[in-house]
Length: 308
Image 1 (tube, rainbow, N blue to C red):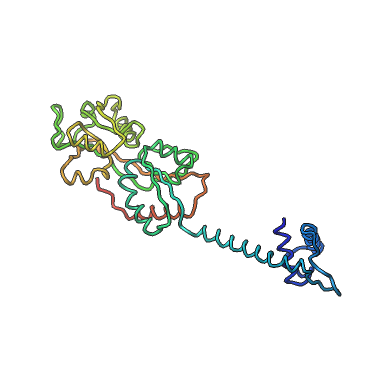
Image 2: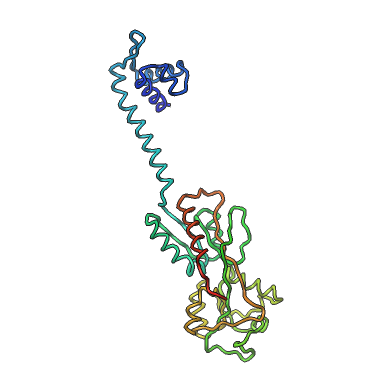
């Protein structure tokens, strides 16, 4: 209330009239008088003398006036600063992303965004799909990125922005006595091969298992000899001949080009999956978050993903 009374006091001083101040402030003259009286009571000093239908500042009023001016200036500076903050792309940007997106899609885009907006401090956690969803729901991540099977969550706004395909890979030296892997094969013939896969909560693992079910194969029939939470660990194990692996084509493009691994083609066709961007519906979206999402989607529109 005190700041309001000081604003009214300042207006009366500058208009040199209670009635003109009331017009300026869209108040009644009696209301203006009441606020000035309350201010005089608060400070224990008379602020105006009324002489010949005119008002003049008392010594106390003259001493108070600069503070009223300073207060108004501080409020204006605060408004300007906050308005400017809303327009700035700065501050913290927290991202949670599943493996393929976090390791092979986002880093280059994050570097480009940081070059445009160097005042943004970016952190990214690369975790499995379940943890990405959890972090985004809890508000610990401003944006979540997941791949594969995403069942809508009521707290989240999800948008599918692109996709890729999963490929079964083997080392150049990997052989099996039962199946020729140089020509397209049925997925059913591969179940008993040695497999090196992602952990069960990963988006990649879920997409693969759903693909098996759609083609009347049981995921439980897979001969999984090792499971890792790291795509790079799976690639290393596959390249040493441990078994077959399955991962995003994005993650293994260079190894395929160099001949370090080969793709096992399936009679059933490609294993497609979607990429999703997630945001918490209840969390305030800063300009930085909105600007990054717009930048990311614009970059994705011009991105050429590896062909199947």
